[in-house]
Image 1: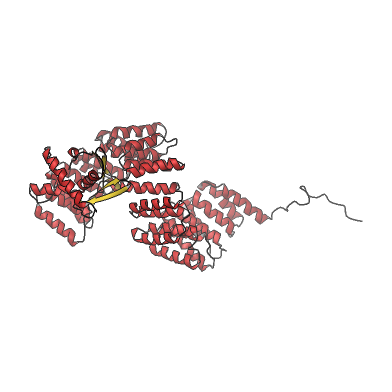
Image 2 (image 1 turned 120 degrees about the vertical axis):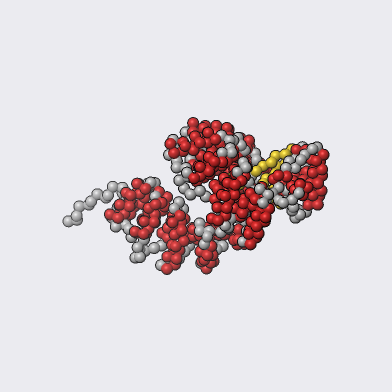
Length: 587
């Protein structure tokens, strides 16, 4: 007799058989890894992986390394050292993930190791694919001091036939621009050979020019991009705003703001923060505040940007009010915000308030002051004429003062007549840091103020002997969308003859109305008449004369200086706002 018929399994005749135990363990582990968003939550899938013998499964390891890179960066390298064994089967997916996870790590040691996985890939006979090289080139870009690795990576991309890939080309442009100004030509060569139908390509080259200090070239390239018909995206706009901030190009910044509104480019928090920063650096602090007030969402960067903007214009009380408002709405200040509010107190002469904020960093907010904060305090004491207090503060610092703090103190000594102390500090700086031009210039200026011309000449000869040159001061003005740069005594401008005649006319008019040049600040061994002549050809006057030639009466003149650098090498432009009338022009 026939055996009795069995009932089919639930779900009908097409039901899939349940996965085998190893396959089920793999899928369960992958689900656990998807939910791992913190170091603690990563421990459960790791324990499961080890318990069920999945440490040789390339797919599981790929997901584990990816999760560790985002959720627990400190665990990434120990996990790789423990699990990436010689006999482990490798594929491009796993190795690409390792390169990407290391590149994105906040830990410098991990970022430095990222490129090392590519030689491993080649030794194990794993063929790279088009996804390998963008990750690899990003890892090389993170090592700007080692361009040789980037050159080898570029050669490998050529060898394997991926150099012409759009993503690879864009990353090549980024990588070369990260290597410094000397490699911008290589970045441009890649850019010129790459199809330019994507905003990413243009943004990469624009950003490269900005990083390399060629902001004028960045603006010119942006104009070419517009002419080509490619629509800029947010990254492009951020690059152009960085260039405008470097150039002090206010009209360009305002045009970009209008362009963003006209083109419907989303005003993200990042973009608004960049607008605040750029408007402030271009001298329009009120415009920066208006952007801040119009933001629906604000981050601590937004608050800090507007505090910095007000601080740099000397509007200390307003900056402090914004800082207090930030705390009132529940945004905890970070160390950068404290740098901003301390700078505001320094520029506004609010010494007692500054001391209070400095003390509150530790006592109320648990933030250990950094050397930047100590530098702000020294600057505050110096501006207030409290040179002795500043010196005592420096001597009591828990870390070694850096040269910038000492130079800040020297500037205070010079401003308040403590020239002997300034000379002593300058000499000590020169002994410890003999290669920095600022130390020579400061000591030379102290000698000039005490009319010790022989010692001043000896310092200048020593600079020449060592090949050290002083960075010349320059002045920039923006006119009709173009930025013009002037250096004292400069004759490179196409209209320099007309500019010089205008300067002479300005000087005559100033003398006629009773203006007397402040020759005490001319630190040269000259008689009074020659000192007035030295003042006459300052870069600021050349810039003002140029604008007077090219604009109608009533135009506001904005001159940006390159040598005003706030504490700790944070560049800030010193704006001189003058109504266009020769009577208000000052030395």
